[in-house]
Amino acid sequence: MDPLTEYAIKFGIFLFLMSLGLFVGRHREWSHFCDIANREEAMSDMLVTQVKSFPAATMKDSPPCMVVAEVVVATDYLKSFLAKLRNIFGGEVGSYQSLLVRARSEAKLRIQEQARNLGYNAICNIRFQTADVGGNSTQTRVAMVAIIASGTAYHAAPHAS
Amino acid sequence: MLVANTETIAGYRIVEVKGLVQGNTVRAKHAGRDIAAGFKNIVGGELKGYTELLTESRRQATERMLAQAEQLEANAIVNVRFTTSAVTTGAAELYAYGTAVVVVPDEEY
Image (cartoon, each protein chain N blue to C red):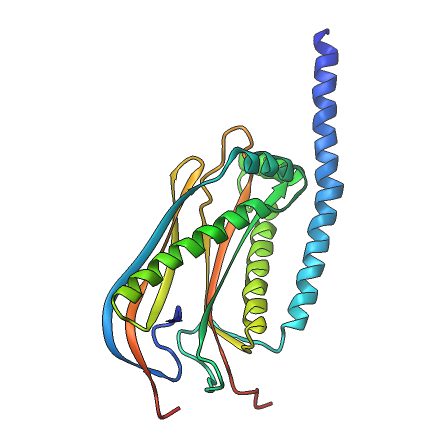
C-alpha cells in the first residue's frame, strides 16, 4: 500500500469518527438534556437546599436519611478534538463545560428520585464532588467525568405560598 | 442506624459522641469496561460500567463504616463524607467517613 492511500484511509477514519461525534454524539447529548429538563420539571416541587440545617423540617413517620448517587459521563470524539484545539490557544473549553453540567444535573436528579421513592419531599446539605474511577488508561484516553452527589433527605412542611 | 451528611439530625438530639468511623475500598476496573468506555468515547454518554463500579465501591465502603459504628454501639452516623483517590492507573480508592453518635428523639419536635 502506498503512503498516499494509507493517509487517505486514516483521514477517512478520522472523518468517520468526527461525523459520529457530530451526529450521534450531538443527538445523544440533546436527548439527555431534554430528559433532564423533563425530570427536573417533575421534581420542581421538591425542596433542595445546600444548607447544613433542615429548613421547614417536620417529623413525619420516618427520620431523615442520606441519599447518594454517582454518574460517570464521557464526551464524544468531536468534542474531545475541539478541546484539544482549544488547548493550543487557551480559553474556556465550552465542550467540557456542558459535560460537567450534564453529569451534575443527572446526579442531582438521581438523588432526588431516590428521596422521592423513599417518600421524602426535601433534601438538604446537597454536595457534589468529582470522583476518580482509576484514571484513564493510556490507550483509550477517555475524557470523562465522575460525580458523586450526596444529601440528606427529610420531610419538610409544605410551602407557605 | 441513622445516616446523614448533616451535622445534626432533625428531630433528634445527640447525647453521646462515639468518635470517627471510616470505611474504604480499593477497586480495579477490568479491561472489558475500558474497552466499552473506549467505544463510548466516540459518541459520548454515560459510562454505565464505571457508574456501577463507583456504586459498588461506595456501598462497600459505607458497609464497613456502618460495621465500625455498630461495634462502637452508636445508633447514628452524622456528617458523612466521601472522597476518592487514584492509587494507580486502573484502581481507585473510595473512602467514607463520619462521626458515630448516639441520638435520642427530641420531644420538642
